[in-house]
Length: 516
Image (cartoon, rainbow, N blue to C red; front, side, top):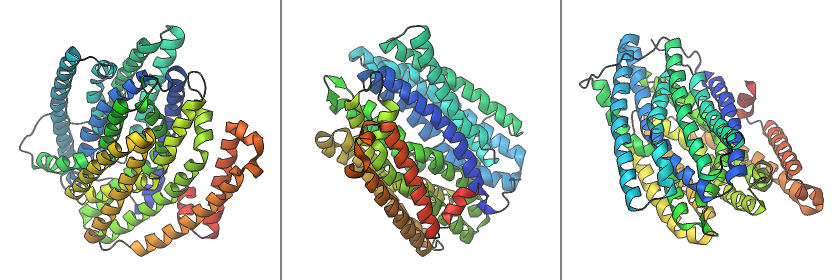
């Protein structure tokens, strides 16, 4: 049977557990990015690595924690409820077997295409992609195993898995540069090797966790199993639905690689990567953690036919996500420049690089609330086994993003690509909200609207305080010349001001966030 959730509000402590573990991964990721900035700056070599790494990362979204996992979770939840554990383990084993066959075929085909392409015209991104393609199979296996663990209400191991990847990259950079004395392309090849080694360790750790919860898959293929067909039917449109952001990111990187140069170097993807990591920090720590924790609860409510309960949980998830996202969006606009300077500006990374990354971060920050909410809304559709609506919306926004990219890249360069991503995220969330209001009329949108109005007021009060602090007459030269001090001052003042304003305005989400 499905483990009992107790009260449905238990997803908030679960989200905090995931967020805490994700924070550890993000701290390691921050160290990784700082090492990238020190040794590679915004070079074409780093741009090539980011392009190459997007290939297995996109596959992870298509076949791993994105489409396949999201399609599997509602079906597995139903199977556990109706047929018990052994049948569920056989179902999961069939999925793993089919996934392995598909991934082997894709990896071999991708390596053949890359080899043929390099024979015609070689490129550094293709060279690195050839090394990283096998990671596709490893990370997709980990992602599906993590989804199974989430259904079993085991969130620690999946949330901690990305830490192993960051540790592998950090160790490979330090060992390659400081111990082996590698530089340039040879050092980047060592980084790619570290990614592959970390992938193997992630697979082993996931297998151990599955055994620990007594839910190791029973392998074999049962092609006629209606549950397999159900997953396939759900997964096909989900490939676009949950992967829209990753598809847009890949398009951004490719356009940046082709059209953004400085002194003959293709710097676009390198700059985008630094900015993306910083705006995705609050999203990864809380936004995706909340969406991951809430999805099994939404699926359970949908399975039980409890539409009122589903609407209540969904509304609460939206309010919690916006409570964090709105001040994070405005706050990043104020702290972008000192944040980038404090973290990255050393070694090969200079003040000019800081300005490029900070400018890009500002435009990405516009869409943070939309990035947060999109993960919640899409999972609500999937919990109801409706993957067609998010897919259609995602397909339209991918087309809009591509058009805006081509229109803005020549005017604003990488900042134009960030602006297009933010605008498309807002369009996607607005569209999904309208569709969801039609499909689930039980959602109390007025309550959400009243809560958001108070959050916007609190965010405005915070913005007023930060405006005073950055005003030259108040800040003085010491803050401008000391990025870490400026960053600390703005962050502390922003958090305190927003928390006090939320308390005065009686925003209930403050208590939910602080309770854990």
